[in-house]
Every structure is written in C-alpha cells, then in structure tokens.
Length: 186
Image 1 (spheres, helix red, strand yellow):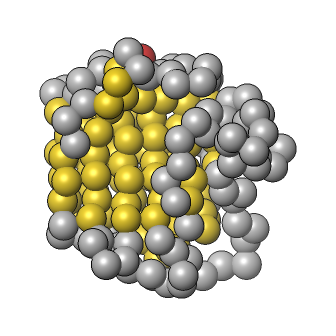
Image 2: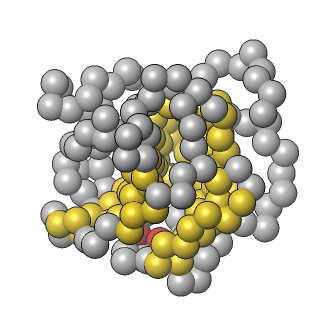
C-alpha cells in the first residue's frame, strides 16, 4: 500500500454515525500496525455512555499468542468470544480492514480477502459510534453504502462526526464525547 503525505488520524479515533447506521453499510479502515504494536481494537458502539452496548468488538492481539477476538458487549456483559488464530495482521505492516453489514451477519474483510463472518447479537441499526484504539496509525476511516463505489479520497465520510480533542485512555481521565474508552486493549 503506497504511503501518501496526508495527515494521519488521531488514535484513539472516535466518530459518530450522525446519519444513522444499519444493514447495507460498509466501513473501510486503512492504516498500519505499529512496529512495536501489541494490540488494537475496533468497536461498533450503540451509545456513548460508559459501558454502552458494543455490537461488535474486534480485538487484534499480536505477539506470543497472536489472535483476533470477535465479541459483543450487551447489558454490561461480554458474550461468547470467537477466537481466530489465522491472523492477517503483522507488526509494522499496512492493512485495509472492511466491515460489510449484511442481512444476518457482518463480513470482516482484511486486505481484500474475506476473513470472518460475525453473526449479529445486537442489530446493526443500533450502532451509533465507531472507535479504533491501540497500537495502530490510521490513514482513513470511511462509511459508505455497500453498493457505493465512490473514490477513496476522503479521510472521513460526510455524516461522520469526529472527536478532535486528544483522548487520554480511561481511567486516567474521562474520555471526551463521543469517545467511550472504558476498557483497555493494550
């Protein structure tokens, strides 16, 4: 993936889907894992309050026991983890991560290869926020309709509100809104 001179997005990255969310949406994230990266997480949150429901948490752990964990957080309780050891991420490497929200499940595509399917435990229509945190640099985050083939020249889609204040990981301080950092991935 060619590096451009464009500015990187701040991590933790938090954004609100101000125009709503649901099936038929595609979220594309392009970035790179830090050379000394241990983990990163992508969360599709249903609210901005502390311990809000999390429709889909993708936790990527790199190192001795490298794995990708997919889960949901509903009514203040984590569900059954889906663990995968086939890891398409590597320290210091670029990646493109896509989440395609279909009728029954979210398809997770890494570097243009379908990697996992995650059956909904919380309806996609309840998702309001996206959060990315951990040991990554972000080039862009984009929300689009699955059938929309627009060019990828925007770092952020219209209809997404970004929190521009720097966030210090909770519990050091309360995160700014819409950031919801109430657990640590690293």
